[in-house]
Length: 158
Image 1 (cartoon, rainbow, N blue to C red):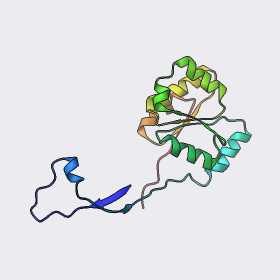
Image 2 (image 1 turned 30 degrees about the vertical axis):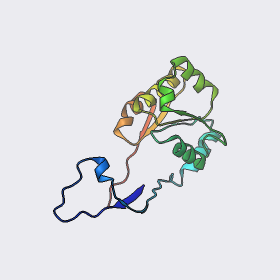
Image 3 (image 1 turned 120 degrees about the vertical axis):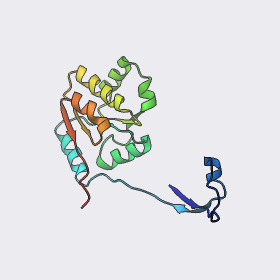
Image 4 (image 1 turned 180 degrees about the vertical axis):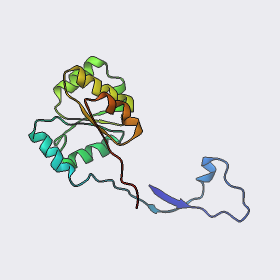
């Protein structure tokens, strides 16, 4: 994220449009954020693999972010199959079924809550037991539809 500033004279009228507000800014620098996976996730993924549990990532994150995080914890291998929400939204049900049948691990990125629900339904219709995780209210429909729903929340600040 970039940071910039512009000084306004005392009593000056505030900019009325975005273009006007972004005019004559002085660049201050860049800010980076990281939300790394918890340290125990890679071991949990390895244990799932050892137990024969299939892992499919369904996230609202950008495809590059989702792929990087998945790779850090051992999901997807060196060339993971990534499907974006836009592509998924235009994928007919029979093609989604084939995709899920032919790829052991998948990464669905930039997906909507409806897409998460659709993927859970497609897997259940094929006889899979579906465990779904989520951390937001938008995950509730898919968590409820899954055979096993696991929700968590960040600890309250102290």
